[in-house]
Image 1: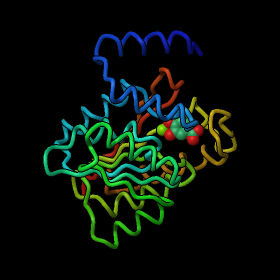
Image 2: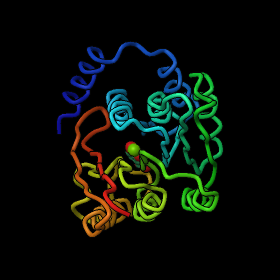
Image 3: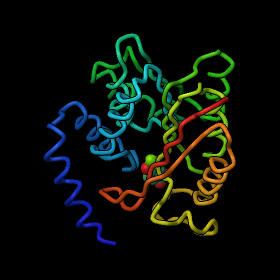
Image 4: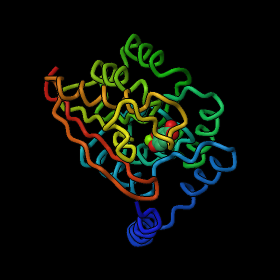
Length: 229
Ligand code: DHB
Ligand code: MG
C-alpha cells in the first residue's frame, strides 16, 4: 500500500490533463460541506466515464447511485443534444443536493433524478417503458449489485455498455467473509462476488474488470458489453 504515492500521481494526472473546472469543483465542495460520505469518483475517473460515454456515442445513460451528482455531471456532459440521463438515488437529501449541483452546471434539462431504493425505481422505469439505455453506470450499494445487474440487463439493448464501480475494494472481494473496513455497510464482498459470478455465467454479456489505484485507494471498474438479449 502506498496511498501517498497514489494520491500524488492522481494529482499529477489531474493537474496535467484536467483543466480547472469550477462548477464541478463547486459540486464536490457542496457535497463535502453537506456531510456526504467522501466516496464520489475522482476527477480522472470522471473524465474516463465521460470519454467512454462519448466513444460509445451514448444518448441515454442510466446511473445507479447519484450521491451528490458528481459522476452524474461527468456523464451528463457526454450526452448530446436531445439525449437524457436518468440517475437513481435512495437518499432524498443527497438527491436534493445533487439536483442543485446539476442545475448549477446547466444540466437540469438532461438529468432526471429518481428518488427511492433503486430496486424499486428500476422496476418503475421498466414498467414505464423507459430505456433501453446505451450506457449504465452501477455505483450504488454493493450488496444489491446482483439485482442491479439483472435490472440493467432488462433495461439494455444489444450494445449497451454496463460499467460497475468498486469491484475490487482493496482485494476484499477475494474473500466473501471479509468485511472491507473502507465500506460503511457489511456484505459488500459477497455482493460484488455474486456480481462477478453472474457476469461469468451470463451468456448475454462479455466483460472484464480493471484494478485501479489512486486517491480512492485500490479498487476497480468492471466493464460489460451486452452482446445479445
Ligand atoms: C463506498 C461506495 C462507493 O461507491 C465508493 O466508490 C466507495 C465507497 C461505500 O459505500 O463505502
Ligand atoms: Mg463508487
